[in-house]
Length: 467
Image (cartoon, rainbow, N blue to C red; front, side, top):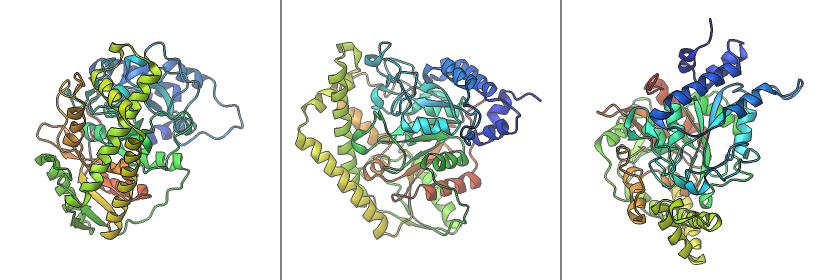
Protein backbone atom coordinates (compact mmCIF):
# COMPACT_ATOMS: atom_id res chain seq x y z
CA UNK A 1 0.00 0.00 0.00
CA UNK A 2 1.47 3.40 -0.96
CA UNK A 3 2.59 5.68 1.84
CA UNK A 4 0.43 8.81 1.62
CA UNK A 5 -0.16 12.06 3.48
CA UNK A 6 -2.50 10.36 5.93
CA UNK A 7 0.29 7.98 6.90
CA UNK A 8 2.68 10.92 7.16
CA UNK A 9 0.41 12.73 9.60
CA UNK A 10 0.06 9.69 11.83
CA UNK A 11 3.82 9.36 12.30
CA UNK A 12 6.40 11.22 14.35
CA UNK A 13 10.01 11.47 13.18
CA UNK A 14 10.93 8.16 14.78
CA UNK A 15 8.13 6.35 12.97
CA UNK A 16 8.92 8.04 9.65
CA UNK A 17 12.56 7.01 9.90
CA UNK A 18 11.46 3.45 10.69
CA UNK A 19 9.24 3.43 7.60
CA UNK A 20 12.20 4.53 5.49
CA UNK A 21 14.45 1.88 7.04
CA UNK A 22 11.87 -0.85 6.30
CA UNK A 23 11.65 0.28 2.69
CA UNK A 24 8.00 1.24 2.99
CA UNK A 25 8.65 4.79 1.77
CA UNK A 26 11.57 6.57 0.14
CA UNK A 27 13.05 9.82 1.53
CA UNK A 28 12.14 11.63 -1.70
CA UNK A 29 8.49 10.64 -1.28
CA UNK A 30 8.46 11.97 2.30
CA UNK A 31 10.03 15.21 1.12
CA UNK A 32 7.39 15.70 -1.55
CA UNK A 33 4.58 15.13 0.96
CA UNK A 34 6.10 17.70 3.32
CA UNK A 35 6.78 20.25 0.57
CA UNK A 36 3.27 19.96 -0.87
CA UNK A 37 1.76 20.33 2.59
CA UNK A 38 3.99 23.30 3.42
CA UNK A 39 2.99 25.20 0.29
CA UNK A 40 -0.69 24.34 0.68
CA UNK A 41 -0.80 25.55 4.30
CA UNK A 42 1.47 28.57 3.90
CA UNK A 43 -1.39 31.01 3.14
CA UNK A 44 -3.25 29.82 6.24
CA UNK A 45 -0.43 29.71 8.79
CA UNK A 46 2.61 31.54 7.38
CA UNK A 47 5.02 29.06 8.93
CA UNK A 48 7.84 29.49 6.39
CA UNK A 49 9.88 32.51 5.43
CA UNK A 50 11.81 30.73 2.67
CA UNK A 51 11.62 27.48 0.78
CA UNK A 52 14.57 25.46 -0.45
CA UNK A 53 13.08 22.19 -1.65
CA UNK A 54 15.33 22.11 -4.71
CA UNK A 55 18.35 22.08 -2.39
CA UNK A 56 16.82 19.15 -0.52
CA UNK A 57 16.02 17.30 -3.73
CA UNK A 58 19.56 17.78 -4.98
CA UNK A 59 21.03 16.35 -1.78
CA UNK A 60 18.74 13.35 -1.89
CA UNK A 61 19.67 12.75 -5.54
CA UNK A 62 23.38 12.78 -4.66
CA UNK A 63 23.68 10.49 -1.62
CA UNK A 64 26.92 9.73 0.16
CA UNK A 65 29.13 7.22 -1.67
CA UNK A 66 28.96 3.56 -0.78
CA UNK A 67 30.97 2.71 2.30
CA UNK A 68 30.35 6.07 3.99
CA UNK A 69 28.94 6.51 7.48
CA UNK A 70 25.65 4.57 7.86
CA UNK A 71 22.42 6.57 7.68
CA UNK A 72 21.59 8.45 10.86
CA UNK A 73 18.57 7.64 13.05
CA UNK A 74 16.33 10.15 11.25
CA UNK A 75 17.27 9.16 7.69
CA UNK A 76 14.83 10.71 5.24
CA UNK A 77 12.74 12.72 7.71
CA UNK A 78 11.71 16.20 6.43
CA UNK A 79 12.90 19.08 8.59
CA UNK A 80 12.80 22.88 8.81
CA UNK A 81 15.43 25.33 10.08
CA UNK A 82 14.59 28.52 11.92
CA UNK A 83 15.52 31.71 10.06
CA UNK A 84 17.62 32.81 13.01
CA UNK A 85 20.54 31.12 14.71
CA UNK A 86 22.45 28.27 13.11
CA UNK A 87 22.76 28.84 9.34
CA UNK A 88 21.60 26.42 6.69
CA UNK A 89 23.79 26.02 3.63
CA UNK A 90 22.21 27.38 0.47
CA UNK A 91 19.64 29.72 2.03
CA UNK A 92 20.26 33.19 3.46
CA UNK A 93 19.58 34.11 7.08
CA UNK A 94 17.13 37.03 6.96
CA UNK A 95 16.03 37.02 10.61
CA UNK A 96 12.59 38.38 9.77
CA UNK A 97 14.01 41.73 8.69
CA UNK A 98 13.59 43.80 5.55
CA UNK A 99 17.16 44.96 6.13
CA UNK A 100 18.28 41.40 5.33
CA UNK A 101 16.20 41.05 2.21
CA UNK A 102 16.90 39.72 -1.28
CA UNK A 103 20.43 41.14 -1.30
CA UNK A 104 21.50 38.82 1.51
CA UNK A 105 23.60 35.99 0.05
CA UNK A 106 22.95 32.35 0.88
CA UNK A 107 24.92 30.95 3.78
CA UNK A 108 27.85 28.92 2.42
CA UNK A 109 27.71 26.18 5.04
CA UNK A 110 25.59 24.70 7.78
CA UNK A 111 26.05 25.77 11.36
CA UNK A 112 27.28 23.08 13.72
CA UNK A 113 23.83 22.09 14.98
CA UNK A 114 22.23 22.00 11.54
CA UNK A 115 25.17 19.97 10.26
CA UNK A 116 24.76 17.49 13.08
CA UNK A 117 21.02 17.23 12.48
CA UNK A 118 21.63 16.72 8.77
CA UNK A 119 24.18 14.01 9.58
CA UNK A 120 21.42 12.38 11.62
CA UNK A 121 19.40 12.03 8.43
CA UNK A 122 17.04 15.00 8.62
CA UNK A 123 16.25 16.61 5.27
CA UNK A 124 15.83 20.39 5.68
CA UNK A 125 13.83 22.05 2.90
CA UNK A 126 13.08 25.54 4.18
CA UNK A 127 13.38 28.20 6.85
CA UNK A 128 10.66 29.01 9.35
CA UNK A 129 9.30 32.47 10.07
CA UNK A 130 10.56 34.65 12.92
CA UNK A 131 9.87 38.17 14.22
CA UNK A 132 12.54 40.70 13.35
CA UNK A 133 15.78 39.54 15.02
CA UNK A 134 13.67 37.39 17.35
CA UNK A 135 12.64 40.38 19.47
CA UNK A 136 8.91 39.71 19.81
CA UNK A 137 6.38 37.32 21.29
CA UNK A 138 4.48 37.42 17.98
CA UNK A 139 5.89 36.11 14.72
CA UNK A 140 4.42 38.87 12.59
CA UNK A 141 7.38 40.70 11.03
CA UNK A 142 6.79 43.65 8.72
CA UNK A 143 8.79 41.72 6.13
CA UNK A 144 6.20 38.93 6.39
CA UNK A 145 4.80 36.41 6.69
CA UNK A 146 2.26 36.70 9.50
CA UNK A 147 2.46 33.40 11.38
CA UNK A 148 -0.78 32.04 12.83
CA UNK A 149 -1.58 29.40 15.40
CA UNK A 150 -2.85 26.22 13.68
CA UNK A 151 -5.14 25.55 16.65
CA UNK A 152 -6.81 28.97 16.29
CA UNK A 153 -5.67 30.96 13.24
CA UNK A 154 -7.07 34.22 14.57
CA UNK A 155 -4.37 34.04 17.24
CA UNK A 156 -0.61 34.17 17.17
CA UNK A 157 1.76 31.21 17.20
CA UNK A 158 4.15 32.93 19.61
CA UNK A 159 7.74 33.96 19.12
CA UNK A 160 10.35 33.89 18.25
CA UNK A 161 10.19 30.28 17.01
CA UNK A 162 6.61 30.80 15.90
CA UNK A 163 7.09 29.46 12.40
CA UNK A 164 8.74 26.33 13.74
CA UNK A 165 5.90 25.70 16.21
CA UNK A 166 3.25 26.27 13.54
CA UNK A 167 5.03 23.92 11.12
CA UNK A 168 5.13 21.14 13.72
CA UNK A 169 1.59 21.70 15.03
CA UNK A 170 0.19 21.76 11.48
CA UNK A 171 1.87 18.47 10.57
CA UNK A 172 4.19 19.94 7.96
CA UNK A 173 7.26 18.52 9.70
CA UNK A 174 7.42 16.33 12.81
CA UNK A 175 10.47 18.15 14.17
CA UNK A 176 11.80 21.66 13.55
CA UNK A 177 14.88 23.60 14.63
CA UNK A 178 14.29 26.39 17.17
CA UNK A 179 16.21 28.84 19.35
CA UNK A 180 15.52 30.36 22.76
CA UNK A 181 17.09 33.46 24.38
CA UNK A 182 14.18 34.39 26.64
CA UNK A 183 11.53 31.75 26.02
CA UNK A 184 11.53 31.52 22.22
CA UNK A 185 11.29 27.72 22.17
CA UNK A 186 8.92 27.33 25.11
CA UNK A 187 6.50 30.21 24.41
CA UNK A 188 5.45 29.04 20.92
CA UNK A 189 5.54 25.41 22.07
CA UNK A 190 3.04 26.26 24.80
CA UNK A 191 0.87 28.30 22.44
CA UNK A 192 0.81 25.64 19.72
CA UNK A 193 0.57 22.47 21.80
CA UNK A 194 3.95 20.98 20.94
CA UNK A 195 6.96 19.95 23.01
CA UNK A 196 9.77 22.47 23.48
CA UNK A 197 13.01 21.75 25.34
CA UNK A 198 15.45 24.60 25.92
CA UNK A 199 18.78 22.91 26.72
CA UNK A 200 21.10 24.18 29.41
CA UNK A 201 23.96 26.50 28.57
CA UNK A 202 26.81 24.88 26.69
CA UNK A 203 25.17 21.51 26.06
CA UNK A 204 24.36 21.82 22.33
CA UNK A 205 26.91 22.83 19.66
CA UNK A 206 26.49 26.42 18.46
CA UNK A 207 29.38 27.28 16.12
CA UNK A 208 30.72 28.18 13.69
CA UNK A 209 29.01 31.33 12.44
CA UNK A 210 26.55 31.27 15.32
CA UNK A 211 24.51 34.46 15.08
CA UNK A 212 22.20 34.38 18.08
CA UNK A 213 24.42 34.43 21.15
CA UNK A 214 22.52 37.07 23.19
CA UNK A 215 25.35 37.26 25.68
CA UNK A 216 25.18 33.53 26.35
CA UNK A 217 21.43 33.49 27.04
CA UNK A 218 20.44 31.69 23.86
CA UNK A 219 20.22 27.97 23.29
CA UNK A 220 19.25 25.95 20.23
CA UNK A 221 17.37 22.71 19.90
CA UNK A 222 14.10 21.53 18.31
CA UNK A 223 10.35 21.54 18.69
CA UNK A 224 8.60 18.20 18.30
CA UNK A 225 5.27 16.42 18.58
CA UNK A 226 6.55 13.54 20.72
CA UNK A 227 8.89 13.12 23.65
CA UNK A 228 10.67 10.20 22.02
CA UNK A 229 11.62 12.43 19.09
CA UNK A 230 13.05 15.16 21.32
CA UNK A 231 14.83 12.55 23.41
CA UNK A 232 16.33 10.91 20.32
CA UNK A 233 17.46 14.27 18.93
CA UNK A 234 18.96 15.14 22.31
CA UNK A 235 21.06 12.02 22.44
CA UNK A 236 22.09 12.38 18.80
CA UNK A 237 23.26 15.99 18.99
CA UNK A 238 24.94 15.60 22.39
CA UNK A 239 26.54 12.26 21.48
CA UNK A 240 25.14 10.59 24.60
CA UNK A 241 23.43 7.23 25.00
CA UNK A 242 19.87 6.77 26.19
CA UNK A 243 19.54 4.39 29.10
CA UNK A 244 16.16 3.09 30.17
CA UNK A 245 15.78 3.29 33.92
CA UNK A 246 12.83 3.70 36.28
CA UNK A 247 12.30 7.30 37.37
CA UNK A 248 12.85 7.53 41.14
CA UNK A 249 10.58 9.61 43.35
CA UNK A 250 11.50 13.24 42.84
CA UNK A 251 11.18 16.39 44.89
CA UNK A 252 9.54 19.03 42.74
CA UNK A 253 8.92 22.66 43.55
CA UNK A 254 5.63 24.25 42.50
CA UNK A 255 5.64 27.92 41.54
CA UNK A 256 2.30 29.28 40.30
CA UNK A 257 2.78 32.98 41.05
CA UNK A 258 5.00 35.13 38.83
CA UNK A 259 8.04 36.37 40.79
CA UNK A 260 7.88 39.89 39.34
CA UNK A 261 4.15 40.27 39.91
CA UNK A 262 2.50 39.51 36.57
CA UNK A 263 -1.02 38.12 36.89
CA UNK A 264 -1.19 34.43 36.05
CA UNK A 265 -4.60 33.72 34.59
CA UNK A 266 -6.66 30.89 36.05
CA UNK A 267 -6.38 28.34 33.19
CA UNK A 268 -2.59 28.45 33.32
CA UNK A 269 -2.46 28.38 37.13
CA UNK A 270 -4.90 25.48 37.14
CA UNK A 271 -2.87 23.54 34.57
CA UNK A 272 0.18 23.73 36.84
CA UNK A 273 -1.94 22.82 39.88
CA UNK A 274 -3.44 19.81 38.11
CA UNK A 275 0.03 18.69 37.03
CA UNK A 276 1.28 19.00 40.60
CA UNK A 277 -1.54 16.85 41.97
CA UNK A 278 -0.86 14.22 39.32
CA UNK A 279 2.81 14.13 40.26
CA UNK A 280 1.91 13.73 43.94
CA UNK A 281 -0.42 10.88 43.08
CA UNK A 282 2.42 9.23 41.17
CA UNK A 283 4.61 9.24 44.27
CA UNK A 284 6.63 12.41 43.87
CA UNK A 285 6.96 15.08 46.55
CA UNK A 286 5.67 18.48 45.46
CA UNK A 287 6.43 21.48 47.64
CA UNK A 288 5.37 25.11 47.18
CA UNK A 289 8.00 27.67 46.23
CA UNK A 290 7.64 31.27 47.39
CA UNK A 291 7.84 33.51 44.30
CA UNK A 292 9.88 36.00 46.32
CA UNK A 293 12.72 33.48 46.39
CA UNK A 294 13.25 33.88 42.64
CA UNK A 295 12.42 37.59 42.36
CA UNK A 296 16.07 38.78 42.27
CA UNK A 297 17.04 36.16 39.68
CA UNK A 298 14.06 37.07 37.48
CA UNK A 299 14.94 40.77 37.74
CA UNK A 300 18.52 39.95 36.73
CA UNK A 301 17.22 37.88 33.81
CA UNK A 302 15.09 40.79 32.60
CA UNK A 303 18.04 43.18 32.81
CA UNK A 304 20.30 40.79 30.92
CA UNK A 305 17.75 40.12 28.18
CA UNK A 306 17.08 43.82 27.68
CA UNK A 307 20.78 44.69 27.54
CA UNK A 308 21.84 41.92 25.16
CA UNK A 309 18.80 42.37 22.93
CA UNK A 310 19.38 46.11 22.60
CA UNK A 311 23.10 45.71 22.10
CA UNK A 312 22.44 43.11 19.40
CA UNK A 313 19.99 45.44 17.66
CA UNK A 314 22.57 48.23 17.78
CA UNK A 315 25.23 45.94 16.32
CA UNK A 316 22.88 44.85 13.52
CA UNK A 317 21.93 48.44 12.71
CA UNK A 318 25.58 49.43 12.68
CA UNK A 319 26.68 46.67 10.33
CA UNK A 320 23.67 46.75 8.00
CA UNK A 321 23.31 50.55 7.81
CA UNK A 322 19.60 50.17 7.02
CA UNK A 323 17.41 52.87 5.53
CA UNK A 324 14.84 54.33 7.96
CA UNK A 325 12.06 51.99 6.79
CA UNK A 326 14.18 48.86 6.80
CA UNK A 327 13.83 48.19 10.53
CA UNK A 328 10.64 48.09 12.55
CA UNK A 329 10.09 50.99 15.00
CA UNK A 330 10.73 48.96 18.13
CA UNK A 331 13.93 47.55 16.61
CA UNK A 332 15.15 51.10 15.96
CA UNK A 333 14.29 51.95 19.57
CA UNK A 334 16.26 48.95 20.80
CA UNK A 335 19.18 49.89 18.55
CA UNK A 336 19.21 53.45 19.86
CA UNK A 337 19.20 52.27 23.46
CA UNK A 338 21.83 49.64 22.79
CA UNK A 339 24.03 52.17 21.01
CA UNK A 340 24.02 54.34 24.11
CA UNK A 341 25.13 51.57 26.44
CA UNK A 342 28.55 51.86 28.01
CA UNK A 343 30.98 49.12 28.92
CA UNK A 344 29.68 49.50 32.47
CA UNK A 345 26.15 48.71 31.28
CA UNK A 346 27.32 45.61 29.47
CA UNK A 347 29.33 44.48 32.46
CA UNK A 348 26.24 44.95 34.68
CA UNK A 349 24.33 42.57 32.41
CA UNK A 350 27.10 39.98 32.59
CA UNK A 351 27.15 40.27 36.38
CA UNK A 352 23.35 39.85 36.38
CA UNK A 353 23.75 36.58 34.47
CA UNK A 354 26.34 35.37 36.98
CA UNK A 355 24.08 36.33 39.91
CA UNK A 356 21.08 34.57 38.38
CA UNK A 357 23.14 31.47 37.65
CA UNK A 358 24.31 31.23 41.25
CA UNK A 359 20.94 32.14 42.77
CA UNK A 360 19.01 29.51 40.84
CA UNK A 361 21.64 26.85 41.51
CA UNK A 362 21.41 27.71 45.21
CA UNK A 363 17.61 27.50 45.10
CA UNK A 364 17.68 23.99 43.67
CA UNK A 365 20.37 22.85 46.10
CA UNK A 366 19.11 24.52 49.27
CA UNK A 367 15.57 23.22 48.78
CA UNK A 368 16.80 19.82 47.52
CA UNK A 369 14.68 20.22 44.37
CA UNK A 370 15.03 17.97 41.36
CA UNK A 371 12.78 20.16 39.21
CA UNK A 372 10.59 23.26 39.33
CA UNK A 373 7.05 23.14 37.94
CA UNK A 374 5.42 26.36 36.69
CA UNK A 375 2.72 27.41 34.25
CA UNK A 376 4.33 27.67 30.81
CA UNK A 377 2.64 31.03 30.22
CA UNK A 378 0.71 33.50 32.35
CA UNK A 379 -1.94 34.07 29.68
CA UNK A 380 -2.82 32.76 26.26
CA UNK A 381 -1.33 34.89 23.50
CA UNK A 382 -3.69 37.47 22.01
CA UNK A 383 -5.12 37.81 18.53
CA UNK A 384 -2.91 38.34 15.52
CA UNK A 385 -1.92 42.00 15.36
CA UNK A 386 -2.32 42.72 19.06
CA UNK A 387 1.41 42.40 19.79
CA UNK A 388 2.78 43.64 16.50
CA UNK A 389 5.71 45.93 17.13
CA UNK A 390 4.20 48.93 15.36
CA UNK A 391 5.39 51.59 17.81
CA UNK A 392 8.70 52.51 19.37
CA UNK A 393 7.75 52.18 23.04
CA UNK A 394 10.52 49.77 23.95
CA UNK A 395 9.69 49.54 27.65
CA UNK A 396 6.06 48.66 26.92
CA UNK A 397 7.26 46.10 24.38
CA UNK A 398 9.65 44.46 26.85
CA UNK A 399 7.00 44.46 29.59
CA UNK A 400 4.92 42.10 27.47
CA UNK A 401 7.53 39.39 27.97
CA UNK A 402 6.83 39.39 31.70
CA UNK A 403 3.10 39.77 31.11
CA UNK A 404 2.83 36.61 29.02
CA UNK A 405 5.94 34.57 29.87
CA UNK A 406 7.10 35.51 33.38
CA UNK A 407 8.62 32.07 34.07
CA UNK A 408 10.76 31.82 30.94
CA UNK A 409 13.80 34.10 30.95
CA UNK A 410 15.20 32.99 34.31
CA UNK A 411 16.12 29.65 32.74
CA UNK A 412 18.14 31.47 30.09
CA UNK A 413 19.95 33.71 32.53
CA UNK A 414 20.75 30.83 34.88
CA UNK A 415 21.75 28.48 32.08
CA UNK A 416 19.26 25.85 33.27
CA UNK A 417 17.32 23.52 31.00
CA UNK A 418 13.56 23.94 30.83
CA UNK A 419 10.83 22.23 28.85
CA UNK A 420 7.29 23.24 27.87
CA UNK A 421 4.95 20.24 28.00
CA UNK A 422 1.38 20.32 26.62
CA UNK A 423 -1.14 19.83 29.43
CA UNK A 424 -4.82 20.33 28.77
CA UNK A 425 -6.90 22.86 26.88
CA UNK A 426 -8.43 26.19 27.73
CA UNK A 427 -12.14 26.86 27.44
CA UNK A 428 -11.46 28.31 23.98
CA UNK A 429 -9.93 25.03 22.84
CA UNK A 430 -6.39 26.34 22.63
CA UNK A 431 -3.59 24.32 24.20
CA UNK A 432 -2.34 24.84 27.74
CA UNK A 433 1.09 23.77 28.93
CA UNK A 434 3.31 23.53 31.97
CA UNK A 435 7.00 24.25 32.25
CA UNK A 436 9.50 22.00 34.00
CA UNK A 437 12.85 23.57 34.83
CA UNK A 438 15.79 21.70 36.32
CA UNK A 439 19.30 22.36 37.57
CA UNK A 440 22.05 22.38 34.99
CA UNK A 441 22.65 18.95 33.53
CA UNK A 442 19.11 17.68 34.10
CA UNK A 443 17.86 17.52 30.50
CA UNK A 444 17.34 13.75 30.57
CA UNK A 445 15.37 14.02 33.81
CA UNK A 446 13.12 16.69 32.30
CA UNK A 447 12.58 14.54 29.22
CA UNK A 448 11.69 11.61 31.48
CA UNK A 449 9.13 13.76 33.31
CA UNK A 450 7.74 14.93 29.97
CA UNK A 451 7.45 11.30 28.86
CA UNK A 452 5.50 10.52 32.02
CA UNK A 453 3.08 13.39 31.30
CA UNK A 454 2.73 12.27 27.68
CA UNK A 455 1.79 8.77 28.81
CA UNK A 456 -0.48 9.86 31.66
CA UNK A 457 -2.18 12.72 29.81
CA UNK A 458 -1.78 12.13 26.07
CA UNK A 459 -1.94 15.29 24.02
CA UNK A 460 -3.34 15.59 20.54
CA UNK A 461 -0.20 16.01 18.43
CA UNK A 462 -1.76 17.91 15.52
CA UNK A 463 -4.03 20.91 15.34
CA UNK A 464 -5.82 19.45 12.32
CA UNK A 465 -5.24 17.59 9.13
CA UNK A 466 -5.55 20.55 6.80
CA UNK A 467 -6.15 24.30 6.57
